[in-house]
Length: 411
Picture 1: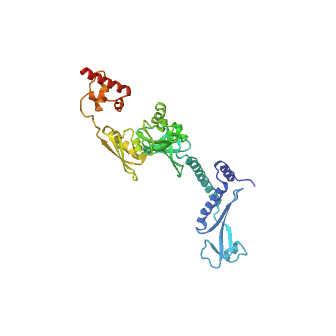
Picture 2: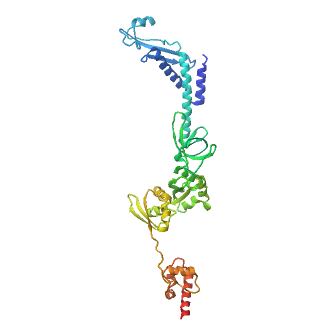
Picture 3: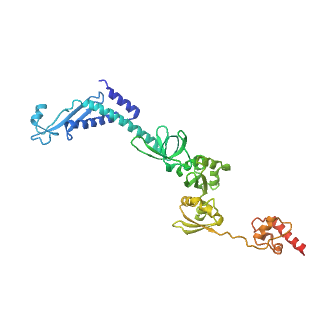
């Protein structure tokens, strides 16, 4: 028996789309039963089947033979039953053709609707299965259109969206522009998968670092955490798994080549690379970079509360514009940090050293160190003078000699 056109179409769809032919046939049978209920009754027992080779439709109503009919949708009298089956008895189930003469047309129409729906669902599921494993990966697409401030990105087979919160505020986009972003999340939806993209997430910077810094990709350097104020400043806490490798230097690259490449991708976003340290005080000092911290006081280690003391000249840097640096540092390491400034002690006004043969810079260093007395300098040892920052052994020997010469000259 030759196969019908419908069966041939179903077999082709099974090959191309992976939708089983029998699954479609079962769905058509169920749909036919639902359609026939309006002719027979909502409680009626209806059997429908389609020949999987010829696509011939059959639909039958099933009723039970009873003495007194209480539900005409499901029961029939013995007299009615014997019109269909002459030897019918009470308690028998009688099957007879469904009364709707056009049920074949209903089945064909239902088949068309189901095929369209099933193909659409299959395509949607395939796209979801393809993109769901790509969550967290970088992707490149082109700007397709805008829905208010949301950017719709063409990813080829499907579209993704970059909502306002996931954009770098300083960037401007045009239709057709190529855009690189990270796939944050893939969700099922009625038409096609909903793909959330981002250029503002810390994960985006992390993926860029993995591309730019081979030591991160091969696990020699680990990224502990990343925080960002997208387009303005980011802080990246890095840790070396090899004591011979400086994690910050490796990420910066030769003459800053690696970090510059990242900043260019992120619309000039400044990136502070912070070396991880197991000692809380040192970690807090590092996190507040580029500010110079003079002292850290741990207030409550369990609650992770600390006070960072900075020179007065570093206070504004430690806080940052609108509190940005302090906020990022606190989020980066998970500590509640309070900044306090220390008044920088200025050298007390005192006598200014004057020794012929010494440079003004050297005499200023000695004066600031409280060594403006020529007699004391003449009696000093080389060891004691080298304690002054900037004074070498050679310079100390020269200072003592010049101080003695000055005294001799005055004498």
